[in-house]
View 1 (cartoon, rainbow over the protein chains, first blue to last red):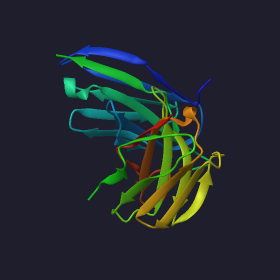
View 2: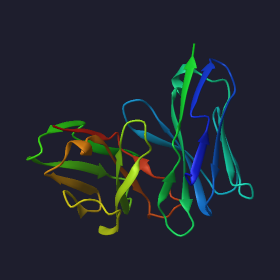
View 3: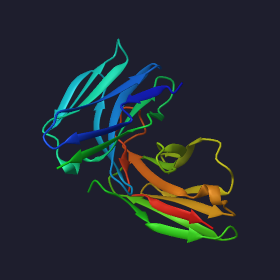
View 4: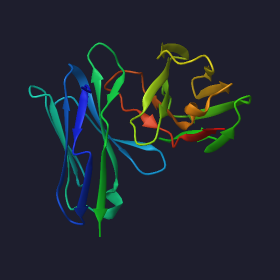
Length: 109
Length: 114
């Protein structure tokens, strides 16, 4: 079993829909990151969370430390949001990122 | 400047070739990373440099040799690679290397080994 699990693995939405991607982890963490990767390469860091909730534009990320769970929400989704969204945690004993397997999001016009 | 640059964007090499990947950042970050990413898989950490010293080597085969000539540059020297080493190689940097630091990723070098 992976230490970081994401669901769903694949998600297709219509433009304008509210989207939720979930991340569950089984290790103690010092931080959790949400990353976005567009087809063909580079990764962009969206959020770093250690507690609570953060908002940036149409993106909202929440974390529940007790339940070892985080969610990434996208409001008013747009085709340009189509990408792979990756949850990564920083394990307590190391500073290394432990990556989830990613969620492939396709937003159709 | 919040950019990490990587060169080349694409590289095709034979199993007997020697080549190098280059990564550069001018954000004053003191931690730099090499990741390997296979198709449809998450990145796998290879090496971490902290203050220009190698701090993590994730048991990477010796045919991959990292080098950090100064705080802005990170190289990955490649020699006698295998076809299974074909992948996207990503460089990243962060302020200090703490887990709570945001890592800034470069666009990657797509490597094909023939």
